[in-house]
Image (cartoon, rainbow, N blue to C red; front, side, top):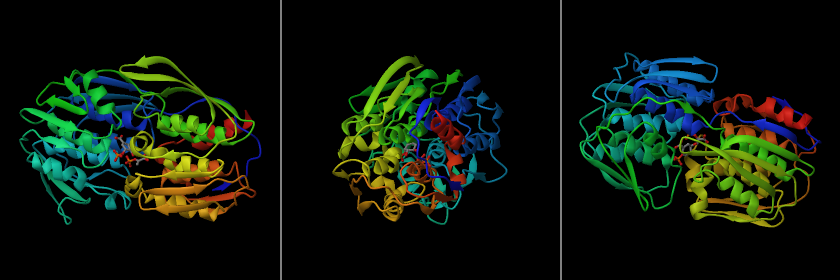
Length: 428
Ligand SMILES: O=C(O)C1=C[C@@H](OP(=O)(O)O)[C@@H](O)[C@H](O)C1
Ligand SMILES: C=C(OP(=O)(O)O)C(=O)O
C-alpha cells in the first residue's frame, strides 16, 4: 500500500470501533450463559471474528449483522465437540481464554493458529490449567499450538501470576468456573480487568481482595446485552498522532476509559501533551468518555513497572511519539512485547531506525532519543503485525517522502476502517 506523506495536521471528531478485549469476552461469556445475549458495537476485526467462528464450531448459534451480534448461550456445559480442528487465526486472546474454557469442558478439541500464533507461548496457560487437572497434548507438550485439549473435571487453583498478563489471569478464572471450589488468582501488578467486571454482569459472584481475585466454580451465567465501548488501543494511534503533529485538534468519542487501560493517556500527559478527558457515562461496569488532544511540544519520559500492563499494546505508537519528544525516553519492564504478534521490541527498533530515529532495543524495552528532524519515507513492512502497521501509517505524518507499507492488510486484525478514519481526520 502506498501512503502519501501527510503535511496537514489532524482535526475533527471520530468514534473508533469496539474494544477488542471486551468483544472477545462478550462472545465467550454469552456462549456459556443461559439465554440470548445481544452485543452492539462488536469489533468486526479479524481477531474477534476468529472468536465467533470458534464458538460456532462448538455448536453455538451466533448471528452477526455488521457490528451487532446475537449469541444463543447454551450454559456452562453446553459446548459441543467440534468435528474439525478450530482455527484461532492470529488471536492470542482467543487462544489463551478459550484454553481456560475448554480445560473444563468434557470434550476433545484440536486448536491451531496462523504462523504468528503458532510460535506464541501457550505454556503460560497450559501449565496452571494442567495443575487444575486439564489435559493438553501436542508436539510441543502444550507449549505451542497446534494442541489438543481434553476437558476434565477441574480442581480449584490458588495461583500467583508469574507474568503480568490479563490473558493468563482470565484463562484461570474461566477454568475456575468449571472447578469444584474457589479459584484464586493473585496479580502482583494490576492488568486489564474486563473479565472480572464482565463476569459480574453475567451474574457470577467474583470477589476482589487487595490484588487477589476469586470465584466459586459451577455458578450459572445469565445472558445479558453488551454495548462494547470504543477501543482505547485503536484510539491511541490518532490521539498520539494529534499530540505529535503541530496544529492538530481532535476528539475521539465514546472510548472505554477503564483505568486498567488508560496508561497511554497518562503517558501523553506526562510528556506534556494537551489532552482533556471527560467520562460521559458508564456501560455496565465500564467507564466511557471523550478524549480531546491538541498538538504540542512533548518531552521525554520513563515508562516502566506498573505503567506497562496499562499500555502494553500502545508501546509501538508511544515509541514513535517518543521519537518526536525532547530528550531520551526509556522504556523498561516490557519484555512481554517480545511475545506478541511479532517481537515488537525488535520490530519497532528496526522500523524506527530505518526511518532515521536514534533508538536502541534492550532486553526489556527501548531507549529512544527524540529529535525534530523529519523521518525518512520508503518501503516498510508491517511484519504482519497490526500495531506495527498502524505505527508506520501514523509515521507518514512525519516523513519527508511517501511510505510504501507492505502487508498493510494486517491492520484488519483490530481496526478494519483505520485508513478511512485517518483520511477523515486529515480532511478535518
Ligand atoms: O486480555 C486481553 O484481552 C489482552 C491482554 C494483553 O495481553 P497479555 O495479557 O498477554 O499481556 C494484550 O496485549 C492483548 O492485546 C489483549
Ligand atoms: C497482542 C495483541 O493481541 P493478541 O494477544 O490477542 O493477539 C494486540 O492486539 O496487540
